[in-house]
Length: 143
Image (cartoon, rainbow, N blue to C red):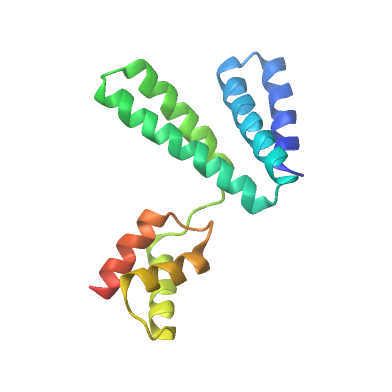
């Protein structure tokens, strides 16, 4: 079942339950997925994950902006949306697992520059780990 189909079913459940806050978040995500689907003439699971990550990143940035503006009401709203989107994404790898893969990449590659190790590591970890976390591990392993 695609994320769009799953979201449609969840939106119907939320209408029936009267939970407008969650329903609105789900509708926004469904619209983002449908927009990308029209652009690409279909979505793969990787595309769906990329759209959700993009939406998550936008919410995290908005949360930071609201915190700077001392808008606690909007910070709470963004926290809720971030938790909803995060629950739809696959589980991210832990630092130990990332480090193991980065060390394998370092042992396999002849070019031990940060950029090359980062590129090869992200190929291995695509969708499984956050780029910022991978970057920190690569710096630690190479440093």
